[in-house]
Image 1 (cartoon, rainbow, N blue to C red):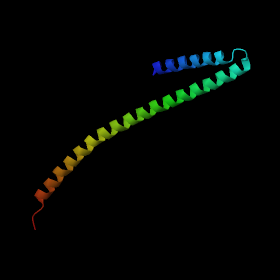
Image 2: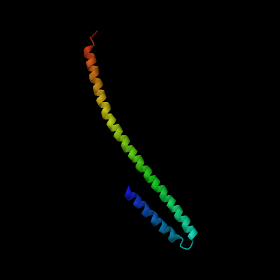
Image 3: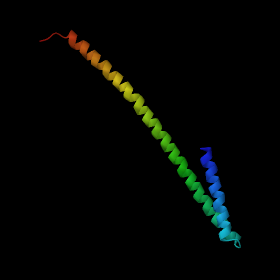
Image 4: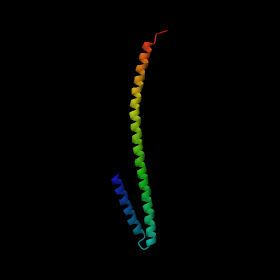
Length: 93
């Protein structure tokens, strides 16, 4: 995750340098362009964090399903045993 943030900051710096190269004589335009690029970088960072959160949530959901699937199998086996014992105790008609 730290590497992603460093990469994002590096991209922002490159974009700022590119903005300066595009308009070296107009400081107001340069500031505006840097602000726009910073906003794009912020949006990209938010998107990246969102994807990370989504992938972590998906991982937790898969783990939960996996854990509970095993528990469900165990409970079904227990119910099967209980049913078998109950059928043994019930007299045939």
